[in-house]
Image (tube, rainbow, N blue to C red; front, side, top):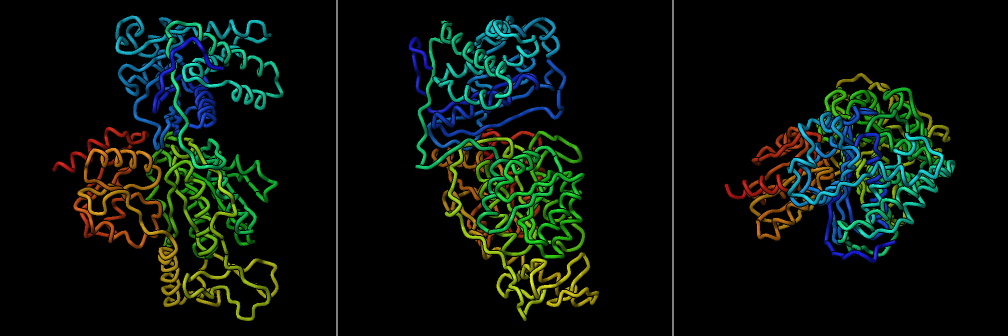
Length: 615
C-alpha cells in the first residue's frame, strides 16, 4: 500500500519518537510500528519511556509518554540518541521532547491540540508553532483529531471512543512516510478486538485515513525506505526483554525435564513475565500470583524442594523483601532463580525508569554469609539466553541464582531469532536415584561441590531441610562451631567454582589498547556502538562487557592487567566499580556514572572516552 506519487529516498537508519499524553496510546503506536519494522526485515531497538502514574496529569510535561525506535539496514544496538522524526500529539509532548530530536528533524503535530489552554498548560508563553522557534525543523501541522472524527463519522461511536483511535491516524502518516504496508497492523486489530467489530472497523478506518492524508498532501512529496538488514536464515520475531525472559525459562524447563513453577507478586517493571507465563499452562507451567513478595518466593522454594524449576520475579523493593527467603534457599542448597528487573530507587523511586542500582543488594543483601550466583542480561533478546543460563546454573549447581535485567531491557524490544530448544546446551540436574544406599543429603560432587537433589516421595531418599545449619554430609541439624565454618566455606567455594563452567571474559577490540571500557548488564548496546565507532576512527580503545558478575570470569585479572587505563561505566553511582576494587584492588579504575532514569547517550560516552584518551 505504498504511494506512486512521492519521491523515495533510501536511508541507512532512522530514529522515530512517538510522544503524547499517557492516555494517547503512544506505547501501542510504537509497538505496532516495531512489528511492522520487524516484518520489513530491519534490525531495530526500542525505548519505551512513560510516567509512573497510571493516568498522569493530562497536557502536562510530567504526564508525557514516549516510545522511541531506531531501525536500520545494519545491526542496531541502541534505540538511538536523537530522533529524526518526532510525532507530538500535544504541546506538552513537543516541549518534553525538543532536546531529544536532531536539528532539521521532521516534527508531525496534532494541530488541533495547539490551542491556548494546551499551550499554556505545557509551560509555553506563546504557541511554539507560530513564534519561529521551530524554524530549524520540518514542521508538519496536521489536524489529527479533526480528521480522526471525520474518518469514523459513519460509525456509531461516542466522542471518547473516537478520539481514542487518533494515535492510529498518526501511525498511518508514519506508515506512509516509510513505505509500510497496513495489512499486518489491520490483522492485529482483528485479533485484539475480535469481540468488538466496531472498534476493529474504527481503527482500520483511522489508520487508512492517516495513510491517505499523507499521500495527498504536498509536504509529503518525499518518502523514505530502509532496506532489510542482513539476517541469518531462521525464524524471527519482535520480542521484549520480559517476554524473552519468560521464554528462556520455558525452554530450560523443557530441556531439563523439570516442570516450571513461578511464584510471584506483581511489581513494575517485572509483571509481564508473570503475565506471559500464565498463558502457557499447556507447557507444564504453573504460575502462582501470591499475596506479597515473601509468599511468592517461599512458594517457589517449596516447589523447588519438590523437583520443579522454580523462579520468582521482582524489582528492587521486592528483592529487599525476598532477602531472608533467599538466605533460606542458600542454606537448603536448593535451585531457585530470582529475576530482578531493576528500576530507579530507593524505595518506590522511579518505578517506570531504568537503573542498575540493585547490584550491591544482589551481591551482599542477605544476613550471614549467603553467596549466590549472579548474571546480568545484556540486551532484550539476550534475556532469553540469560534466563536459560540462570536456570542451568541453578539446577546443575544446586544454588540460587539472581538474574539482573532492567526496565529498559524488560520493556524495550528488538529482533529475536527463535532458537530450536534441541540446539540449546543440555541441562542435567544432579537427581538422586531411588534406594541409593550411599545417599546422604549433603554428600557432594567432588568437582562442583553441589549436593544431590532428592525429590520427596522417592524410595530411600527420606531427608529434611530447613533454615538451621546442617551437619556436613548427614544433613542433621548442627550447632557445632567447626561444622558451621566448614559448611560456610563449602557454600562459598561451590559458588566460586562456577567460574570453571562459564565462559572466559571476552574483549571487543585490541587486547593492548590504551583504554579499556568496562560495563555490565543492559548497557552493552550503547557501549559496543561507541567503542566500534571510535575504533573505526583509529582510537586505541576496547570493551570488556560483563555478563557474569558472581563469580567473575577466571581471566578477569589477566584482562585488566593488559590495559593502561580502565573506565567503568554504570547506570548507578559506581556499584560494579566498588566490587571490582574489592576483588582486584591492584588496578586503578576511572568511572562514569549516570543516575537520571535515562540510558547512556552515544555522544556523552564518546566525549568521556576521548577525554581519558587525551589525558
